[in-house]
Each structure stands twice: as structure tokens, then as C-alpha cells.
Image (tube, rainbow, N blue to C red):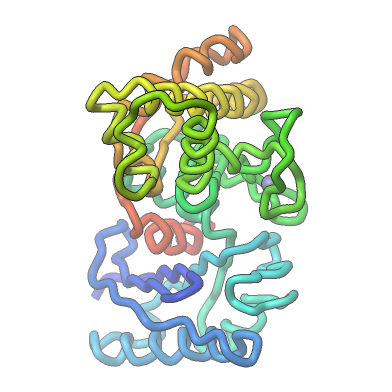
Length: 312
Ligand code: ZN
């Protein structure tokens, strides 16, 4: 039997898990609930149980398993220490030191957005591209920077936090991180809704957005229908995201930006709004960048987590 590897993506409500062949072929994926009670102390125990059960079920032995990769929602350093994962109730713990003895297998850990970027490079929208930046436009804005095929997690695991690049000097609302004017406040799904609300409050201009519930999807649907107010909102979104990504490009000079998350479901139309501002603000020498949609959706995390273990 060929060797297998596990990829685990820990989220606030569920833990997504996958078992792969070493070449990245998915054998099976499944989910278990994230038990957050008592400061999330059972989460890694549940993960370990689920992995051990699966190894038995599939008829493998421990020797057939390369290891377990884990993505978690917080900054994770090279040793596997995560410094606060508010969503899970974790303060500062070392994922590798806790999980490895439980499964008796090699374990590696990384930040969830970083790990998802690795997944997109391995089997998704950035396949075969060693210099790429992944951007996730979801409830927040996440990012992962890959240079020469290696994830840039940084000194304390805070690398690739694209959502917290400051793109606006005159912001009165606060970002979840405590700063003001972060990219996340304009380019996430919640950010787009915020921009739309602000625009609608300016005047009485007719717009589809005044009917029904406002969401990032309803804004992009209205843009596609030619709604001029929605197009103004998209223009703002494009300005902020284009400006933020221009800064990123000028530092790491990626070949591709792979854009995923709920907002990206609107499709290539988002790039029509981002590209002009990106081109305007980027350093000339870093201008030659492609924008591509992510391909793995919610599975990017398990793919990337598995890849984390295979890498070394
Ligand atoms: Zn922020």
C-alpha cells in the first residue's frame, strides 16, 4: 500500500478532515464538530480519535502514515505554537506537542489561511506556481504568501495577514484587530455590506439594493444587473483591494493572486474592479500579475494541511 497523509482544518464550528495519498489524491474527507467547551481542551483529543479510527477503518497501519498536518485559526509559529485562537477558546498552546503524542505520528501546524494558500498552490488555482499569494475574501480577509514554493509564516506566524494592511487613513469604525482602516473593513463580505450601507445612506438614489436583504452576493448581483449604486460600491471595493494587493505585490512580486472565499463566488467580475487600481498603485516591475479564482473552496485547508507534512 502506498503511504497516506492526513490534513486537518480546525474551524469555529466544525473540524474538516481529509486523508490523502502522498501525491495529493483525496481518499476521503469528513467533518467532526468543534467542541469549544472548557477552552477547547477536547478539540485535539477529538481530532486524534478520529484519525486513529480512520486509519483502522481503511485498514492501514501507523507505518503507512506520513503524518498529520493541521491548519488553525490564529498565528502559528514554526514550532506549532498558536498564540490565541479566540474562535476555539484557545489561549497559547502548542498544537504539535499536544497532538503528536496522542496520534504517535509526526505533526505539523500552520495558520488556516496560510495553509489554504498552500493547498491552492498544490492542487488548486495556483497549481504549479511557486510564487503566489492567496487571498480569502470571507467574513474577514485572510491571506497566504508563498515564495519559491514555501509558505511565509514569519517570525511569530503572523505572516500573510493581508486583511490588516491599512488602506484608509480616515476611518472611524474599528477593525476586529483593534486598528482602523484595515483592508478587511472594505473587501470582506461584511466590509462590502458596510460600504453599501454607507453609500445608500448618502442620498435617495434608486437602487436594487434598497429592496431585500443586503449581502455581498446581493451587491454583486446588482452590479451584474447594471445597478449604478452597486457599481459605485464595487468601485470602492476595487479601490481598496487593488491598493492593498499592490502593496503586497511590491514586496513579494507574485506571479498569481489566487482569490477565494465567499465573495469570490461572484466570479471574474470582481477582477474588473480590482485590476485598474492594482495597476495604478503597483510598482512597475511587479505589475505582471495574473488574477485567478481559487478552485478548492472549503477544501483548500485540508489539502494545504496535508501538503504541510509532505513538504519536508
Ligand atoms: Zn485589522
